[in-house]
Image (cartoon, rainbow, N blue to C red; front, side):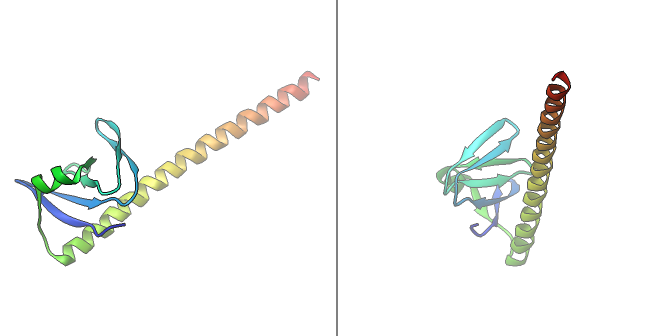
Length: 113
């Protein structure tokens, strides 16, 4: 992951980092794809959205100190871990639901025999 730094969109301060890989961002407007080099911005209400580098550079300027940037990195990583844990929970629930349906189907087939 690239260094995460703080930036200012006048007059609002947001957090942002540049992604090194293509990633799908779940935005308030739906899923959007961020390409390598795009900025991933976390807005004032914790909403996330991608921004092309030229637009980002024209709109934002760096703010804050290195210590705050490090705290922001930790906070963003913690947020991402929570998102991934929720995704994992949903995948596990779907997996167990499919396994349960398959087991019931097998039982029904054996009962019919």
